[in-house]
Image (cartoon, rainbow, N blue to C red; front, top):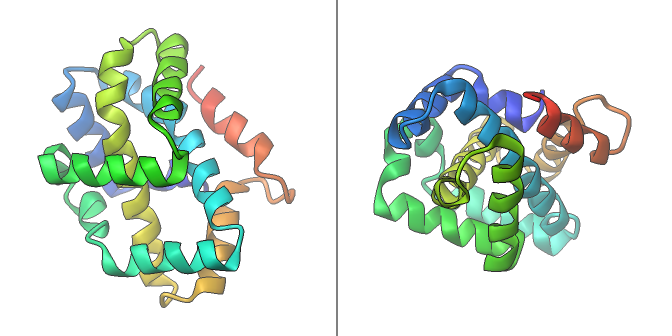
Length: 175
C-alpha cells in the first residue's frame, strides 16, 4: 500500500477532515492537494534514506520523535509546534525553501488552490507523512532493514522496482 493510501485509510480520513476544516476546503480538494504534495516528500525521504547513514538518521528520527501522534490525533497538526516540526522535516527531505515553494506552486497549478494555502498545508502533510512512517516503523519492530523494505513497498505500490511511476500515479490519482 502506498504512503498516500496509508495516510487516507483509517486515521487518515481524520487527517483529511482536519486539514479540510483548518483550511476551509472540501475533503476531495484536500485529498487532491495531499496527493500533489506527497510525492515530493516521499521522493525526498527515499533519496535521504538511500545510504546507510541516511537510513540510520531516518530511523533515529522515527524512533525518537512524537510523529505517530500526528496520525493518531490529526488535530495536533495545526499547532505551532507541529508546523515547526513539519518545516524541519521539509528542510531535511526537500533541502530548501525554494523546493518547498515549488512543490506548493505545482500543487496549486494542478488543484487550482491558492499556493499560499498549500504553503501553509505542506508542513502539516510532511508531519503526517512522517507520522505514518513512524507508526509503520514501530509496527515493524524499529528494524532499519524492515523499514527500508516498508519504505520501498510504500513508495513502489506496483512492485515493479521503480518508484518513479508510482509517484506520478499517486499525483494523478485525483485528476
